[in-house]
Image (tube, rainbow, N blue to C red; front, side, top):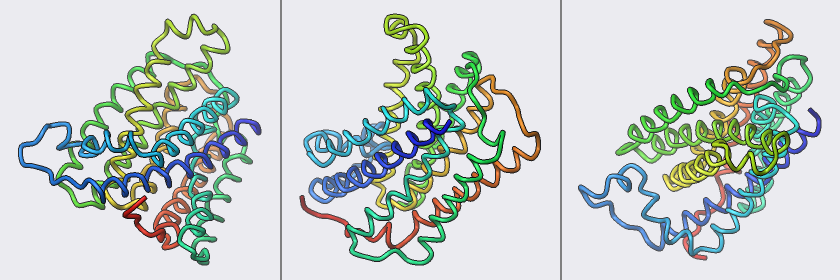
Length: 303
């Protein structure tokens, strides 16, 4: 479990760097190539207007650098999931915002505020409770593939409904709703990553290549990146990151318990500890996401 936790923290750091770089690229592209949304435009660009930016993003080196760190974070996360369960690894990714703080403070040339440190303490306390209380983090268990498929289907419907709900809303509401959709997508991708790494270790490359989870990881990852980019492009990084960072561990914990045959230990005490840990991490994440230090980096308009 310790190795899985350490790798999850490393993945969170990579994700923090990637989020900052992708937000910067999105703002650069939005400033240079702002295109008014024409009435009656294509259905896909109506609900996911970031698709209009894709060709420009693919030409921007800052976006590609963010993609490199995002890919590295995904690979480290995959290794972490090999040594730990989905419900163990994913909540630790909340610490992404702890790594965001020094990066944002440096970029904005601001010192972290006392409220920032309180948020950091809340996240760290949540992590300590999560790791220290026996049974709070479910241990390894075999996946129930029928349950996984059902969870994927339900999640897909929810994501589609959220994307439709976000259309025509204010920038803040769009960032929040699309951020939740991205968090759900990332949580499901973690489940698929767990299945894929287990296949690779237990059955080999050939068997994994003939199975569906690995291909589903590619689809889930691409969709997660697209939704995250759309949430960033809405203009409120704080709201987008908070929505994604809180949704991911909560949904991951539910999926980890519902789709894997994990032993239940600790009873009501363990569940209470889990709820307290998730609450502390969520409060800390929301606090940091709305901090002037984290949000204070100037919006770039040129490369």
